[in-house]
Length: 272
Image (cartoon, rainbow, N blue to C red):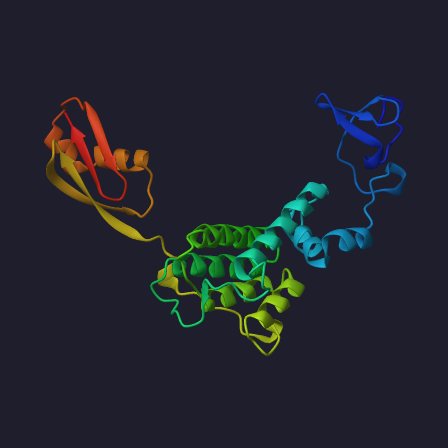
């Protein structure tokens, strides 16, 4: 609105030099969060949004913008982001040229022991718990986004194969949030009954725990101890754990550390 308190429709203003001005006159206006009101010209027509973005995008955005109990500002950029997420799911599963399931989706491949098995089980747990709490639907959507990012990075290798069981489990998670897309994908994956009638996927408690690995600690190239750490721990974490290891502290006996060499997931070598 302008200094006189007049409100302007979002289509009547433009961004200019880190500020907003009236498109027709260049008059500066201030932006602020307000409840939707016709008098404040900030009402969105849901039919228009569905026509442009699809019902799934609208539904998913409403669940994603924040806890159900919280008052959250409506942002059309957020719907753009959610729509991109749905497109990303489609591209992961469906070949853009043929419309068939991507050749990387392998129905003969077992889920067990594959790189995406643990991320899938963590996603199932996260989405399940978020749904059960009612007020954390946004967290469930975030969990699914994280999984699709992980799966897409994995699929970037043209030789990578993804068990169809993993994809089908994800589609079942997606169904309550984006039912139209989920049903279409479910059918293309070869399933006959509706995904909405399919059993909810279950997670393995052991597979939702962080994977642990053993990393040797050396002092001047000599093995002094082996520490158990979370797989994927960063260099700084490994360095701090090694320097505070009791056996290392005893062997150093107060000697100044000149350098710490960290080979991620392999070893830590302390030079003094």
